[in-house]
Every structure is written in structure tokens, then in C-alpha cells.
Length: 187
Image 1: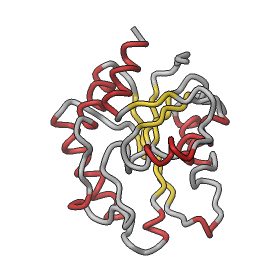
Image 2: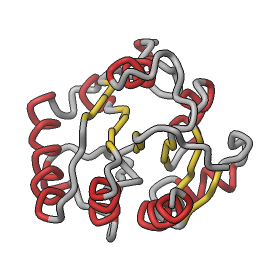
Image 3: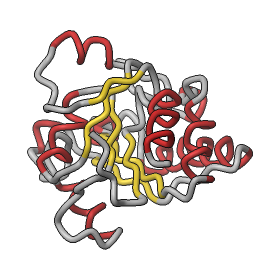
């Protein structure tokens, strides 16, 4: 189901772009790109898509790392990505834990509403593909009309096995497979 009228693609970070860890990604050294993911983002950039990251970063709320460290992690990602001709337009992150019951932590829609506003989409993400490895990455944006895509990296295999995915969720081996499929359907 590809009805994308938008030039925006929303990606989760941990488990989609980089290897995830149950102990959190707490330093630039721990941030390791999944093979092909940065090249995939570069392909989107070169096809004139705006790539946005939407990520829960409760490690900040848990005091495992701070915002400065998160910025250093993202700086590493930006450097590696720029060498390939890729670009991230914006990173939206929630620093809160579940217990804080904020409006921004996925699966809630707060960050996605902010993305829609920032990119002048009103209150809808209709036709915007959103790529994640867990159910919480997909629920909120789907309620706003986004197209769900699950990757089988990170928590993806467990998420598929558990079930309960939104209708029309497309499943891809990894981010590179999503990008190849997506760009082929956009021609």
C-alpha cells in the first residue's frame, strides 16, 4: 500500500539504523550502524526525500547518558552518513521514561505531531512511510495516517512473532530492503 504524497520518510533509530542493545546505546563507541543502513539513507537523500529520525531515548531519563552524549552519538552518525552523501533533516527524541507518562514517548503521538507541524503537514502523516523495529514505532504514526513498515533487524523478528501489527504493515529484511522497495514503487 504505497500512497506516499510526501517527500518525508520517518525512521526509528535503534534497531533500524544502528544495532540496538538492551543496555542502551550510551556512547558514540556503542553506536554501530547496521550494514547497509547509512547507504540506504543516502539513497533516500539522493532521491530528494527528507529523512527524519523519531526515537525514544529513555536512557537520558534513566541517567545512563545525557543530552550532550546523545548529540555526540548523532554527530558520529552524521559524519558517517555525510561521507556517503546522506542527510538527516531532523531528529526528534523523547528523553522520558515510561513512568513519566509524557505525551511524546512512543507509542504516543507527540513526537509525530511535532514532525507533522515542522514539515507543514498539518495534523496528518497520510502517505508518510514510517520504519521501525517494534510495535511502539508504528502505532502512533499509523493513527495519524502514516504507512507502517517493519524491519527485521533489532527487535523486528520478535515484533513480527508477537503479532498485533497495524493492517497493511509491510515487512522488510532491513532498512536497505525497505529503501529499495520504496524507491522502486515511487518511480
